[in-house]
Length: 125
Image 1 (cartoon, rainbow, N blue to C red):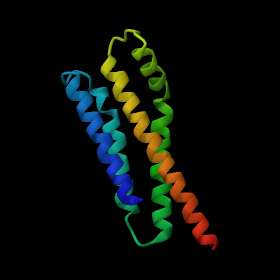
Image 2 (image 1 turned 180 degrees about the horizontal axis):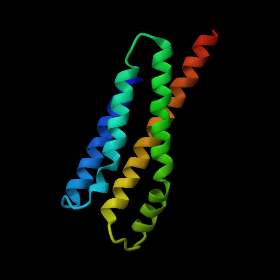
Image 3 (image 1 turned 45 degrees about the vertical axis):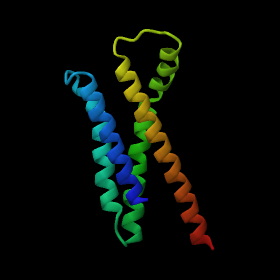
């Protein structure tokens, strides 16, 4: 899971940089997904250890960051639906970027929860 965390961190950085470039380098808030991505890379690299206690700690911290990222961007999911139905937004790229971050964070959290459940079942056997 540590390598998957690093992968999702890289994907979030790409989303952030793409959004920043798409806005013409004028909106630094477009780099917020990149900040979340840096945190995931940091925590994923810390979780890449043989010590199971440290790995569990860092993975739980990383999934918490992913969950916060998802919860913070839920309104963007609704805005994407409204955007597809013709609503005009002042910054449609921002709406798409936040929705992309939301999707990536949700997918990451779901994969982590699935892994945590599988690890728990494995320990009980």
